[in-house]
Length: 212
Image 1 (cartoon, rainbow, N blue to C red):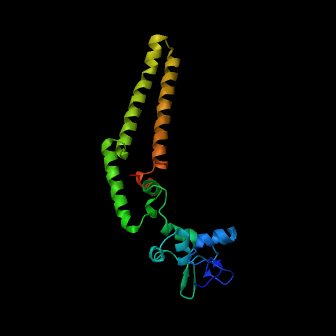
Image 2: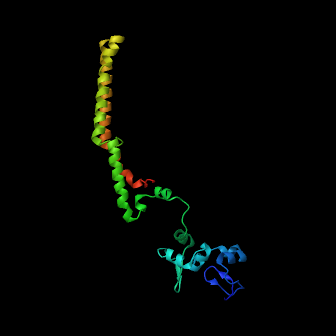
Image 3: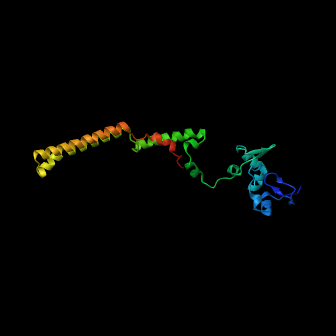
């Protein structure tokens, strides 16, 4: 075997003797930390195979979908960080990785399944009472308004029976209660016309895939 110093890009050059069968990590350890730094123009399949302790054929196969950073003749060079993602199984659990994904991050073939699951979730929540229709919300507000109006209309009679009221005082209490109900009604009508709560669909773009 031809001897020489290990090169991150080319493998070995004629800079010094190397023992037969010596791997890239061993050469790096022998020649110092500066040899451990990958070159800026990318690393080769041979470099990755030696660094990750893998068969060259397996590395080449795993890197087929990996973007190529640069070429030198027929040789391909890859960004180390990107290539590592194709060669090393992540320590992070799959469920945790999926939980951090948004719908737009999913492959096209998985998006339909995601939205189907979301629709089933919406139907379940609606049946369970977690989601209210707009008509139901308006009905509740209307009944609440009627209850408040009925209570305020009794203020004058209640105060008169308990403490006594002059005609002017009674008229003032009635006027104040009528004014309160008018303000509440005006506010409700204004809010309904000028603003509204977002539909649940508006939040789906920010939803992440639920963890398994």
